[in-house]
Length: 237
Image: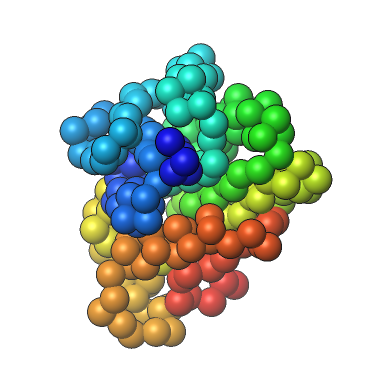
């Protein structure tokens, strides 16, 4: 098959699903990852669904290996997974801190490390890491998540420098707050109200669909790398 192949992590979630739909509409072959709800993934014709727990480095490596074996190459990788455990620093549980860092920062590192030989061998490909506004501005009561997301952005820029000479593009997208997502539904009413108040744009557009469309276009754009594309309408700071 000549159609490009993409691996979407967190494809059972709201943003990952939107990305998968946008890529499917453009003719990509899809490998879709899910943790607890593989039934929510729709990989399309010729696609596959993979299950993995991102707290386990061995499962991450196995996922990357299986995708390359199944599709023969990896033209794009989209990271749209993550968890959040919010608490003030004073009461933040050590185990919760480590879990947030493990899933949101360690896991993408292990995954991209496992895919590195294939990307460099191809001398082509694109990576998009879906991050968070918290990585730009911090989050009161959500230091663990903000720490992980800020680290993810620094990792993206470092990887873009390393892989650029091999023709592999690496970028990040900061999505708007999506109330319908699992993280959005877990947010406190005070946080949701704060997001609405800080949003400088009042719009009825579907934020998840907008992210999916943007990511699909970014993967097709052969010039940008090492960039953070902010789709949010809150001004960081």
